[in-house]
Length: 142
Image (cartoon, rainbow, N blue to C red; front, side, top):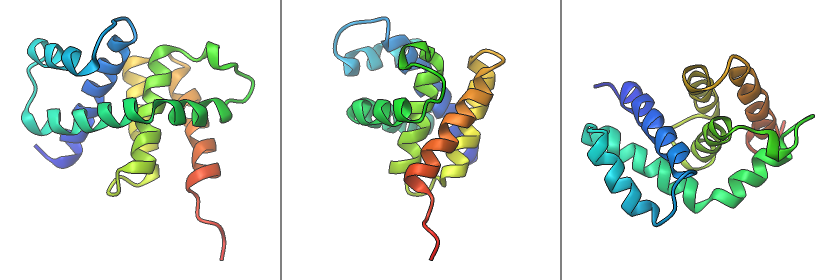
């Protein structure tokens, strides 16, 4: 499988896990092991998904601060669980995965929002991530 296909599937699995984790209690590592027993997944997909899950959960408060600071006309409580987790994955990739350019992370997040969210989700995710990119990841003019 191509790297792009592997990573897209990994993002899907990471999103599915992070969304489900919001409804369970306990150690996420134990829950992740159970998740993999339910959703058999190629090792390459699993490896990248686990990188995303671990990174998101380790940086959760910072990622949520970035999201909340980038909302316009929305309160943090209004952001749906799917959309918040899509945003978390994308912002983690933008800031922590060297070979994923921010624009790719945004495009992939929009695709996740199309697949898992409501009709309004892709536009919302795009707008929030554009603001995050503008404030954190755009190079300043020389």
